[in-house]
Every structure is written in C-alpha cells, then in structure tokens.
Length: 151
Image (tube, rainbow, N blue to C red):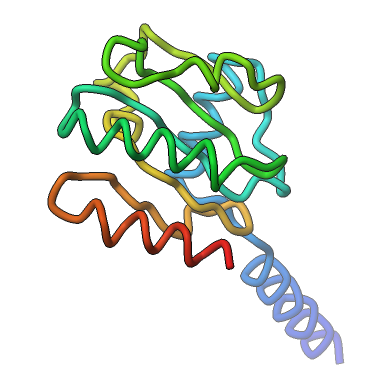
C-alpha cells in the first residue's frame, strides 16, 4: 500500500511539474534585458515587443515599419523598444508615448542580438511565440500579416 501511495504522489508531482508553464531561455533573456536596463517587468498581459531600429538593413523598410507599428500595433499590451536615433526613422511619435516605450541608443548588440533589427516579437504564456523580422525582401507580406493579425 505504501508503494502505491509513493508511486501515486510521484506521478502527480511529475504531471504537475511537467504541465506547469515553463519560461523559455529566449524569453528569460528578454525579461532580463527589460528588468536590468529599463526596470520594467514583462508581465502576462504583454503580448508583443516591437523593436524599431534604423540602418540595420533597409532604411525605407524601417521607416514604413515604424509608421505601421505606431498606427496599428499600439495598445497597452505592446512594448516598444526603440534603438533608432531619429536620423533615418521618425521617432517623434514614440517620444510622446507615456507607457511601455523604451529607448536604448547604447544597446549592446553583441549581448542582445535579438534587438539588432526591426521586428515584432509575439509572446504567449511566457514564451516567444513568433518573431517577424522586417527585411526588404518580405516587407509587404510581413506588413500585411501584421495588419491581418489585428482583425
């Protein structure tokens, strides 16, 4: 009888630990960045991180993406990380945002390569669900996807 109880408790423990949401290493890295650099905790309500850069690939793409991100992705569940300085991309609208918008013009790109180009990082249950990297080859398809995802 005692063996049956130990087995039952062991199975319950394994099921409980196996089914509990686990943070991915990539998500923990994002979480660490925002906590250490901006004193901001990414909570369960945050469903996307929009990274705005300039000059990493296509300047026109970054300009279009910045406008689209500001016009269509802005809500309380979105976090913006702006590494663009404003030399190419108009960052003026982002400077006026009161919440969830962070600027890092000194970004350590070697340590945080996930912020090296413009992108949208979709989050779900403390893991990275989807990353859409903005590049010149696929810009139209990516922007259409972003617009349609909102519908």
